[in-house]
Length: 582
Ligand code: GLY
Image (cartoon, rainbow, N blue to C red):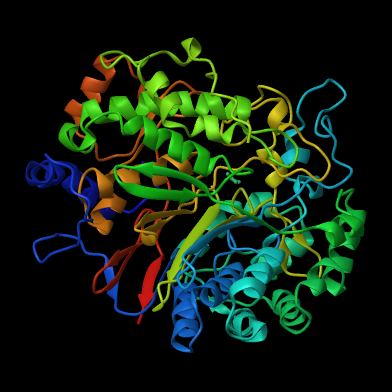
């Protein structure tokens, strides 16, 4: 049974039935305005006239709303929410991880992508995670101090503040301190997730001290989780900025913890870490501009590649979640994930054929090979030849302010609570992002993703990601802001959200809760959520798909612009999220 509430499941079922009705009026000639909720809709997004924050945890969304009300802009709110989530959503919110951010500056209409992905420590060469038999040592790769890449979050938040912030830095870190020091009420979701992580954290005294009671028992919903060490780390960051983390007291404690446990990160690794500004990867979809995260994320490249493939078919007419639509989605997804395994890596180390992979001509050529009446076995699919032009646990939040600035942030520790290891004395959980490298060619990582030379481990290199913070623009202004957690499922979650809004004319709430599907080439299975009709599943099986019903995928946190303000919707797949606006 999937671990999501029955109310959500029945809503999804209801929707699967009701969507066909919506479509009867929505199909036909392409329209370019996006669907806004009206009184007849069963589910509504949240409306705000001025600014809106949508995040996976309610206290953090409130922090963002207050910052907007205090006169902060969208990037100020994004910085404050990033720090707050490190306290309130320790599964994924973090100081010890990394991520990506897309920023739209309304005054200049410029867009930029900030890359604060973790980097491999200098000691981590290509075969770093192989044992003496040449096999991948999964414990070292995922559940040890060596699992951690050099964290980028504090540098990323500092960089966006330096470039776009309006309020003082200290004011943005302060709310997180006020959550960590007196403590937060443990939500049912946090209690459940800590219970689940208990065995992984048990070997580490510093982790036990922070996340479990003195007798080792787990916190119950409604009890208070106090994080004094994290509060001290946040105070240092508030006072000294990023240098506290990369060169000062926090750095010293992190390195001491590394030394005590054969970790790889040194003080030089920390000192040399840099967040970087990159140009977003760009595409178009049925008259909209799509901007998303470039490598070292695979997210934006494959989102655009997939949208290019989808554009070759009249999905609006074929219907949302019809077998015909899902078949096309699955066949397109297989092609994209096969290419991912071959071509994607850190662009500072390998040449990624971004222009080729995202070109309409390449999509046309690949789409022409898709059999519309038969699923192609994954074994028959190899990465394509894109033109060589020169040239379960992550979290996402989206922010918009009254001036039209928007920020889309996806950041992560990788698995829930990262490696499960708190660096002693800091309250900071260490990521296990090194598992996103291809530790050995062809050996799948925790998400079942494989890779080769382009994503091999290398000193200073950033592991390949699937995170896909995305902006959809019309006339240079964002109309849809979205992103999601979900490991390898992030790209396909964002894809279906965009397609539901543009092709299927759903309002933001409907587009979010509609059942999702996913195919990642390997394993060769079409993964679907509960809520598809049994006859749709039978039709897909008849086309040759191996359909498996698995737990819910993704947790999108999105905003949609309307003439009268912003609509926001926090995915209902994981409890506790909220849209908070003013
Ligand atoms: N750690 C998951 C991702 O970056 O894709």
